[in-house]
Image 1 (tube, rainbow, N blue to C red):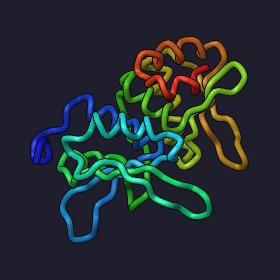
Image 2 (spheres, rainbow, N blue to C red; image 1 turned 90 degrees about the vertical axis):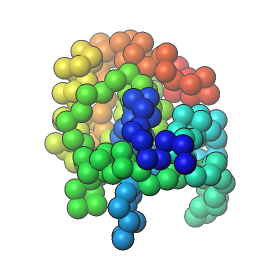
Image 3 (cartoon, rainbow, N blue to C red; image 1 turned 135 degrees about the horizontal axis):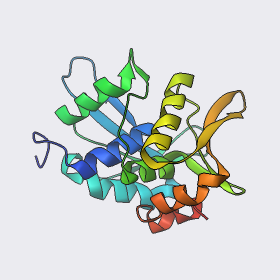
Image 4 (cartoon, rainbow, N blue to C red; image 1 turned 120 degrees about the vertical axis):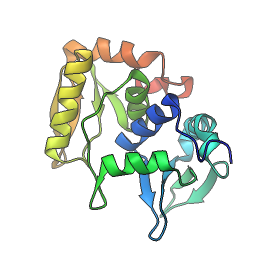
Length: 191
């Protein structure tokens, strides 16, 4: 059973929170007590999924598998086991089944996972694709980045939605913060 009954490690929590801020989803199956995490990325990000799997394998039932999506998309994904630690995170991050952003203390690993999941570089700065979060959650993340790391950012309109744009004066700081945690296969997002 591994770490299924015990507590999540700090590294596992950091990766899970970064994933939930990005492309990951926590779910509770009706009639079950605990939540599980779904990690689902494009096959092009296979190395990244394998890295997440290695870090979380104590709470994962089976290794990542390919899955055909709609059209030509091929996904590569895995699910964790249900876990009480994931249930606690689910209760923080979801209201009425909708993902929200609670007050958080972000560490560099969490930010790096969030960026690897949902970040990009454009011209001289970086974006965090937070379009699925409500306006107040996005403003809270901007405040958290500023208060905890001195990173200036703002909301940038993207096709009718907003996302977080790191201001150019903080791009170097943002890159240095992420650089040591970004896996080699995802470094292209920083360049």
